[in-house]
Length: 496
Image (cartoon, rainbow, N blue to C red; front, side, top):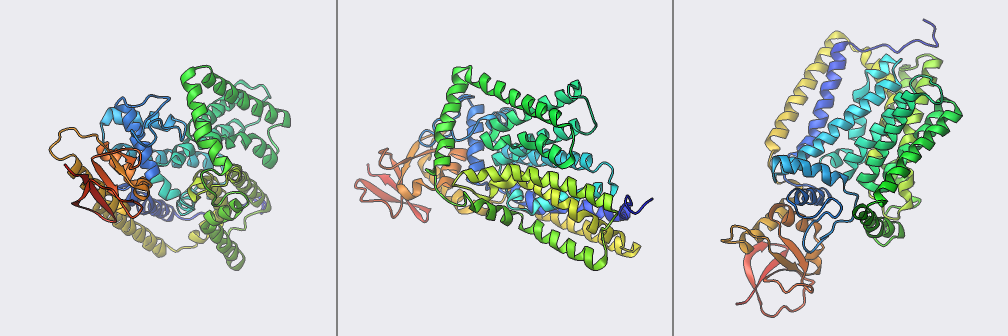
């Protein structure tokens, strides 16, 4: 075999198995340990509550409901994820296992789709194919990807549909085909439908796979330019037809208009705050990719110092192109986020799956050749160490099942409030009120509604029997302090 096409040396099967075992241990430590706690970031808790309410007949498909006092009509996001989770609640009842299981399922499907994209792109590069665990490991430590999959975020489902769209396009371009090939156009149409589902999950941020045909042509110079334009038009037509269908019915049209007004327009205008948007998005992209960039730098150093992962010039060129394709897809998903003045790190989670896979293609040859140099005894030690780490990880996950987690105090507060205000009542769904600071405790809103179906109103808007008081309260005549400990708040009860 010529030096231009020589493949990198492969590690033994024992070493490759050990790498997969290490990946399983990382999933346990990075996702499952958090997932088995009762705590959940309030965004994920709100989504689960909306879905539970929908399953129980409170709210409708196009007008979901969170609570009587906060988001009585939930218009913050498109409703697809709530519909899907509502199916889970309909089947299994009101249990946190539904949102926890749904979140885990989105991770498993996303990992499987990323695996399929990886294998397709690197179909003639066995060394890189076998390095897929490196790609997923890099994704798990990037930004807040692991945290997102542990907390039922919309970005999890967005990743499923976005990865599906990109995979369908990669398959469509796997082999040359005529411009009007029925098979390719069918795959492109399905990719368009997957993008529509992304839109129904998290709005316009789900449109980025639209750029995939152009990026593929730019990097690989195939398919033909006319074919790429045709495919882009087909995808745009599918999306346009989908949006037209939404606007053809009153309920869905009103839902879209509420979403545009409540979330999209206010976010883009800065009405929801300014942090990390605009040009600062470049700094955030570098930050969330920090570990991957550090690994890339170390791999480059190892390649130079120990002459690892060199391969032939043709192989290096192919790997660079494939890495570039994935990194550009990641950029298409992350750069438009800068249009909003309000940007959080977890907004990049979906793009990080592509970024990490792209960087992994560049570092995989170095790591795999380094692992191939392990002697039999060293490979056995690595394997035993991996098994020991996985065993310890499973034990750690097991002992954490059912623990309160990060929101332990808020969960205790919610339980204490419910115990008092719902004492001796078989069914209790009251609205209580709270002073300004307490009312802005979104986690407390979430747990009160998710676990006890208790709504919290602003004290100025509701003369309730119970008030969650704090330092922002003025004088509240006619109320007395109860003995219920909800520090740093105080629970007041109206005097008889």
